[in-house]
Image 1 (spheres, rainbow, N blue to C red):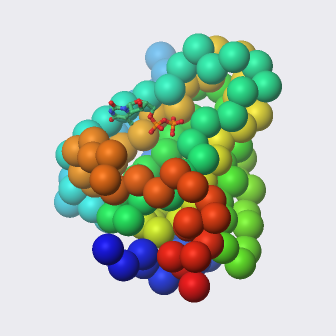
Image 2 (cartoon, protein in one colour; image 1 turned 180 degrees about the vertical axis):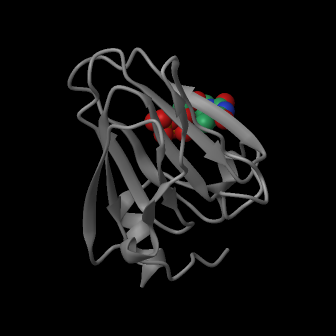
Length: 139
Ligand code: TYD
């Protein structure tokens, strides 16, 4: 399968907005409205021990919205040439990750929740888990 020629500059932080009142906030993410792909799967990371890193892989086709539903963490994006570190710390901000990029997540605050909205169901064949292979495929 061909790996997409995407770069870290194709990813952006999107303000998915919020409805706020004195009793708190609601943020809504809705297919066909404020997300640029159809959501097929939602999963979340939590209880990440202090100092741990997650991710460490790329995807051929999967597109994602990554949201700090609680607390904060960083996402490091890598296209084989450029790297970009994005800090997420508000539940109304979503990092849009396009396919074809290596990513790692670190710097998780205590009690943080990383919510991921994904464009496809889980498929191990969509993963590249070896960084050397990723670099080769990206050339
Ligand atoms: P992985 O995507 O490698 O986690 P991370 O990027 O957060 O480090 O997945 C970790 C394990 O969980 C792996 O064995 C596959 C499994 N998994 C599923 O079964 N379904 C899923 O939707 C996801 C995201 C992971």
